[in-house]
Length: 66
Image 1 (tube, one colour):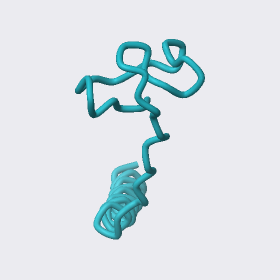
Image 2 (tube, rainbow, N blue to C red):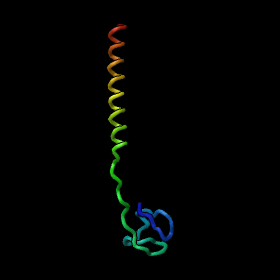
Image 3 (cartoon, helix red, strand yellow):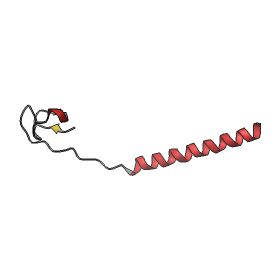
Image 4 (cartoon, rainbow, N blue to C red):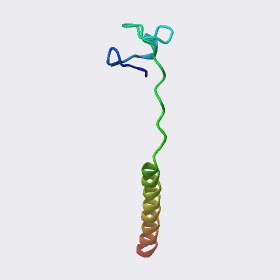
């Protein structure tokens, strides 16, 4: 959703009037997309490794107790 700095509010896509704010008629640009940070990617990889390891431990426990 675009942000209007003049009105200090979010403007829904269906409220836009030819790319301008319906209240103050300021030209609005699309918000910039932020790239995924390295810290987030490392968190996802670490979580996947942990879950795989816990799965392996569960399979080992089942084979030992079965």
